[in-house]
Image (cartoon, rainbow, N blue to C red; front, side, top):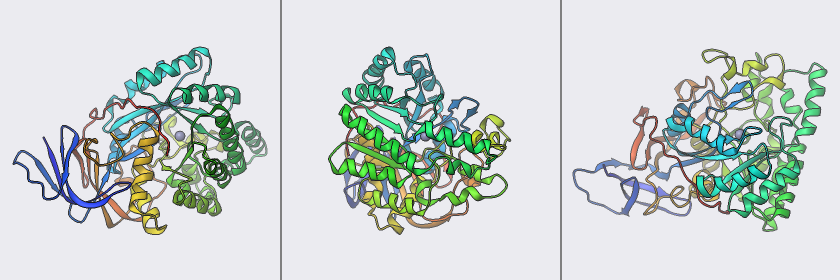
Length: 468
Ligand SMILES: [Zn+2]
């Protein structure tokens, strides 16, 4: 059935006007004023609402098993939560297993993602860089539409690759039109600091932050950028949290080098003070990099304004606070005796758009165009989805969010749709709320009502990585 969204204020990264949008076969067919349609078209009135391109979150970990831990959202629950937050596209992480082909990692991920309710693409985490896996990267890019690869400079012995492997993978990715994503923290020095803290009996959640100081994020970011510069390839720094790291990105971009970076809502709104919460509650905030202080936060907002940061994604990596009902494997309680055993990750996929709208547009004076750019358009361009995703124009997918810029509401974990039992933003008041969400023209969220279904999300075979 065709869909008409009428009388809305349509805002993209560059446009702002009122009009009607006709979507048929999942794609925007016509945009105009006072469009007349037959009785067979479902009509939605968007008077008083913003009509925005569906949000794109390029950093999630759904149903991700790693070592003794597993994230608690399935693709079904994680993408439903995303949809209620106005996000209609995710790029999720799948990983190579040591000694195996990354192609096997992708196959396993495809089985898990079948329950997705919104469209999903995959980044490949490379763990074992060798001649065969470098050849497999080309197959992933050319045959499977996986056009981004993530490498870790942290977690030695688990996820980390050395600089030589990093450099080799960057060259293959960049030389074949793909993006290299980097987790930039100096893992070996962090390991020393963590071991020393644990030996000294400093085991509360707050020591997660003190053992991962911002200078080590700055150092790794600088190193990754220099290696990318030598390799002549573009780079994307994930979850940037530190002023030192942003300075390295800013310096590179000022020289015209294709370096990009994202930050996440928790770094923009929260600080390391949250680790002091009693009753082990600080564990809820244990993610990497850790929360920083206000000085870093001001830098991040500055970076978003000046386009030194181009994307806000969530790093949705949910582990329950309580052991029940899903079990210890899915719970922060694994680390009750030592911060070093707390699963690293936090939820956020449902709250990104309202938080960033409230923070960026209402409190930091950014335009609604810029809000759309950092939450939808730039991620689409960087990760080979534009113009199918990331905008509203004739021929784009009919992924649309009707957003009330004036509604005030309070974030509550109990009202969210993830399986997780907490939110980082419990009780926070925000202005701006998702009212309706369309995936390829089909209304899947209508207020509090769920109209989508598991399995309706499509796999996104992505094109060449872009630059912004
Ligand atoms: Zn992550």
